[in-house]
Amino acid sequence: MHGELGPGEALTLRGIGKTYDVSMTPARESVRRLVAEGALFLSSSGRVSTPVLSNERIEELATLRAMLEPELATRALPRAHFALIERLETINNGISQMVARHDASGYIRMNLEFHRTLYLRAQAPAMLAMTETVWLQLGPTMRALYGRLNRTEPPYHHRLILAALKAGDDPGLRLAVRTDATQGLRMLKG
Amino acid sequence: MHGELGPGEALTLRGIGKTYDVSMTPARESVRRLVAEGALFLSSSGRVSTPVLSNERIEELATLRAMLEPELATRALPRAHFALIERLETINNGISQMVARHDASGYIRMNLEFHRTLYLRAQAPAMLAMTETVWLQLGPTMRALYGRLNRTEPPYHHRLILAALKAGDDPGLRLAVRTDATQGLRMLKG
DNA sequence: ATGATGCCTTTGTGATCACATCACGCGAAC
DNA sequence: GTTCGCGTGATGTGATCACAAAGGCATCAT
Image 1 (cartoon, rainbow over the protein chains, first blue to last red):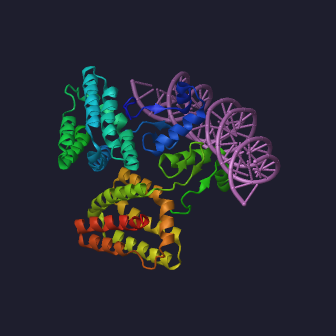
Image 2: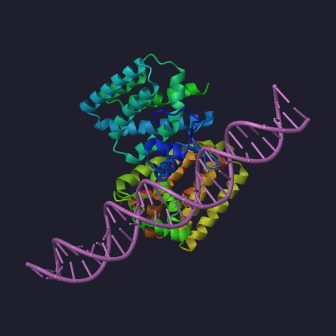
Image 3: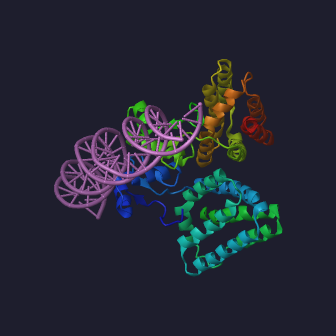
C-alpha cells in the first residue's frame, strides 16, 4: 500500500518467511489474503508478484476512489471538529517534510494517513475497508508515479479539503476530495 | 454469497476439510481469504463464523451497492445488445421458478446471476470484483431476508432494468438498478 | 551469435504433527 | 434451582516434509 514495492516485483513464500522469521505457513496465508484483496497478483503457476496495472485498470481504480472517497468525506463532515482538522494539518505538514526529503514511500504513507484520518470519522468501516483495498491495489503503481514526477510542492488539494471542512461546505469538500484522489492517477495514463 | 449459510453459523477448519475431502491447509487458506473479503467473521480466538450484520453495516453495504451497481450498469449499457437482453430475460424466468418453489438460495443465486451477467458487459473487472465482495458479505443476511418475506412475485425492478436497457435510457437504468439493489435491504432495517 | 534443449534448482501445494488455547458441558456447592 | 468452577475435548497455529511442477541457466548445435 505504501509503495515499498514497485510494480511487478516477485515474492516467494520462503523469502517472505525468512524476512519475517516465520515458516512458510503464515507467509502463505498473508500472501493469499493479499491476493484476495487484489494487492498481489497470482500467476497461473502459483507465483506471486505485485501487480502491473493496465491503463484501463488504473482508470477503474481511480473511478472507485472518486465514488467512494467523496461519500466518506460527506459522512465525516458533520463530525469534523477542530481537533480533527488540527490533526489533519499536522499530517499535512508531515507530507511537506516527506516531499522535502524526496521520500516517495513516506509521502504515500502520510498522504493516505491524511485521508484515512478524515474517513475514520465517517463511521463507515465497510466503506473505508473497501477504499483501503483500492489503495492497496494502487500502492506499487503510486510509487512509480511519485517517483516519476519529482514532486516539489506539498499537496495543493489537501488545503482545499481543509478549507471546505472548516467552512462546512459539503459540495466543495466532495469536489476537492474527488480531485485529490484522481489527479495523480490521471498522469499515469500518458 | 448465495445464502446457503445463515448469519452467525460457525465453521471449523477440520469440518470444512472433511466436507471437501482435503486437509486443514487448503481449508485454512480459503477461510482466510473469505475473512479478508469480509465474507466470514474471525473471532478474537480465531474461530470463524458467518457475520451477523448490524443495521448500520447493512445500510453501509446497501449504499455501496447503490454507488457501484448503477456505474456498472451505465458502462454496460452501450454494449448491451439483444443477445444479452435475451439472456437476462431467461435468467429472470429462472428467478420466477425459484420463487415458485420457495428456493431462497436458488433465488439469491439467480438474482445475482442476473446482475453479474449485465455487469460483465461493463468491462470493469475491479469494479465488479468489489461489487461481488459486497454480495459476499450480504449473503447470509439476504437469506434471512428472503426467508422472512414470503416472496410470491418475481422481481419487479428487473423488468424496469430490461425496459431501460431496450430503450437505451441511462438515467432510467441507473434508477432501476439502484432501487433493485437497495429495496430488499431496506426491509431488514425494521 | 543465436536459438533450442536438457538438467538442476527453486518454488508452491497439501498433508501431518505437536502444542497452546479456548469453549462447552458436567458436576458440585449454596 | 441456579451459579460457579474445573476438566476434557475440540480448535487454531506454526513448523516441517514429500512431491510435483515450473523456471532458469548452461551447453550445444546451427
